[in-house]
Length: 239
Image 1 (tube, one colour):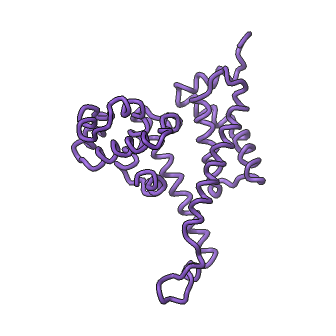
Image 2 (cartoon, rainbow, N blue to C red):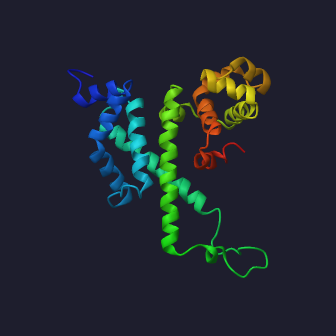
Image 3 (cartoon, rainbow, N blue to C red):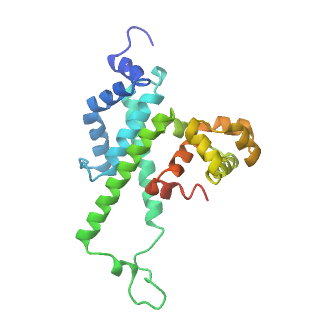
């Protein structure tokens, strides 16, 4: 890139290694983040009501950490990443919504449908709001704890296994530590994977564990604490 870099590029590169600078950049560009979220939703997002706004903020932070000047305009890159993450979330919601039908019988021999057992609309909205706020609180706490381990959400996304065989190997590594109190305690104390013991007990190649270290560490952090809602989302991966 010729000439002086655009001021936002300078801000982005500083924010890559400075969490306070990243927070300031996100705050400065909240109108942009809201605008991209509104474009996706077809309406302005509502604070405390639309998870999409939180997802867009996380995607913007991911854009900061993964951006390189060769990619072109930062805001175009951030907009693309925000839309991609919102689409991913929409697809996940559709998959989960198809798991249970409200028209199915509540129980064998019971004429009521599952929908008949759900509280009235006002109560349902209260429950949904509570779940949304709890999910947001879990994500914020997870981000803070991951920082203690030198991890970010974008690190985990970039480190996620792409092949089924590798995913199964990472799953085995996670369950090996998770189901062994000594290994888990060692991991939480040192904030590093117990590589020697882990390779010996799991049988997973050290090279595979090292390549996906951040992904494995993030899952172990989630399993070491009370992230019940997040754990529910990753339960399918860990089967």
